[in-house]
Image 1: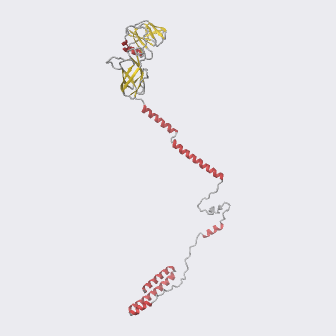
Image 2 (image 1 turned 30 degrees about the vertical axis):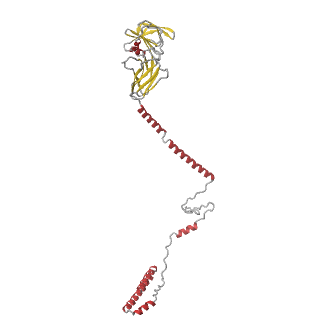
Image 3 (image 1 turned 180 degrees about the horizontal axis):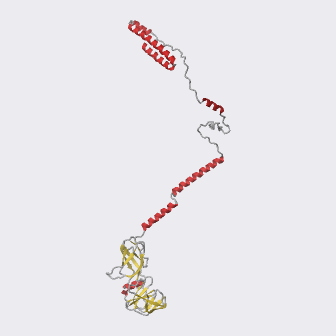
Length: 409
């Protein structure tokens, strides 16, 4: 118990030493050391001669706690706060500072060039001067105008992001690409107009109608006299678009739906028991714009001849020379004879002993042995060699004279 009190006193002395000056601390240390040595001596003596049991318990019960030693007052001065080196400058600045202007609550600049903050504002806070109503309205209008311009630019860029030069370049590129992708293979086909006699005999190959993609071919049905022959029914096979004629019509229109299509067509004519057949063939080099199919029979609209030629060989219409001369392309070796008294629409051709008269007029004399007529009114007559032809031009008689049997160069 005594040792505990001694240690507590020593600890208290140590704490007090920390708060006192060096001299005072050294005195307290010396006094504490002497007191500790005396206490230790007394404790040793007491331990050597222990008292009786009863006396020890009574002494322990009645003993009062020992009082701590009182420390003398220190003569050392308390620590002094360090002096502020800017105290004199601050005092001078406070004396020279001028009060704020109460009119606009803005501080007056100091002589050093620094402006003090206004009342109630921080040093780093900006001071905004009040604006008039006109200035506020002008500022608001300016902001609205800028907002409109930005919205217009955004909408314009969204709707038309490309410049005019870029658009032109894109269109030029599109044109070149489209021309390359849609260009026709083989170029433009050569057009033809054909007049051909269709044979009704069995075993004869049907005529071929030349078609081409992107082109319409008109097939005209007519009789041996060149009069239209009405079509009753049309059927076909293959990838073609065929438009049948109207009731009583005689023209059939055909368009191929591909570049390499092949098929056939069967035409039933009014009053003819045998159907007329054709072969449909798609080509890229040649296309027949018009195909006049002449049937070697008299149709329901056939006009009676003005002069009966007697034994007219209708099958002579199958002569290839008649068809070629009717098309305006005479066969090789044909001699063309000059005529006087008629225009250039009438001409005479000689092939060996046969003479062919090609004219849109009606032949009155001499008589002919065969004839062929196209849908456009042109007729070819097969006649004997003669120096004069009598023709009818809408009821007016015309004389066509062969000029000394001279052929054109």
